[in-house]
Length: 104
Image 1 (tube, rainbow, N blue to C red):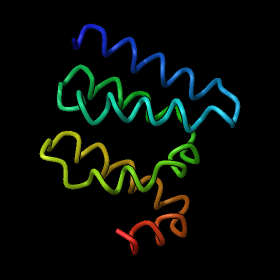
Image 2: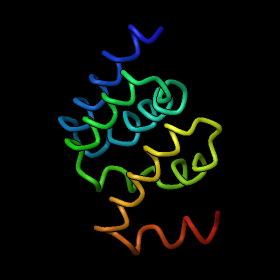
Image 3: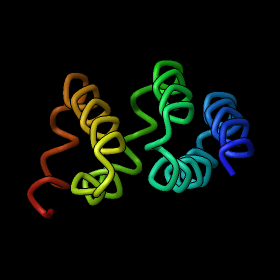
């Protein structure tokens, strides 16, 4: 299954970067499915880390509640990726994290 996951994750990152605003949420939610399910595998981890560098940080503002909800995942590597992404979001948009964190 990992063999199929890596190209799918790469394609979703490319789709997010190249898509129009109305499709961001759809592609990002699909990406999160792969991330949360297969992110603990080293190959997928590397692809997600690389993809996070090319995606504008503003894209993640749409899915902050989903990311925060998964911060207690039983998969340590997935937690690490989420933590790093939330820190990056916080550096550029600290106000965006306030409400989702208070509600969580």
